[in-house]
Length: 216
Image 1 (cartoon, rainbow, N blue to C red):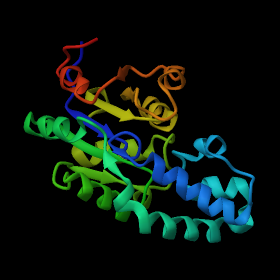
Image 2 (image 1 turned 180 degrees about the vertical axis):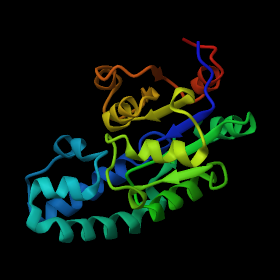
Image 3 (image 1 turned 45 degrees about the horizontal axis):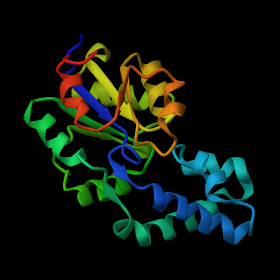
């Protein structure tokens, strides 16, 4: 069993339920440019990677236009369409009280990370935040996780990366940290299990035992 000192969290789909907002944002923007081409099922793979990566793969000549349209539509509806998952805020507050170092490691821009944390009323809980603006390479490259560890003064052996997508699990593995996937991921527990995370969380409060080394 292992005691952890640092807990690194993805934001969207892990702590904050932004799934419907993201899906609807993609459907709106892509529907305007490619009417009838995209459905809920076909945009699900777009949840996780940075916007520019997704839109580059669709049509690199439209990346800037699509990104700007997405951000505008998303921002206008953000605060009304997102909320923390059950048990997240209570667990984060307890972990902070128990003395763990907490970090956000996200592919989102800092502006939108801060907006999400404000909705959760968790702005003061995190020791550092690593977003799209802070890195050269995003997850699953290990760089964002390595930056977070450096900022909070934690070794990889005492850190755990928690996320809802393969980017989080593979990124954590490449950085040499243990990983925890969340079973409430829109990608599904079975999908995440194929990446062999160290743990599978079925509720956020599972972390309270895992962090103390009380669960294998």
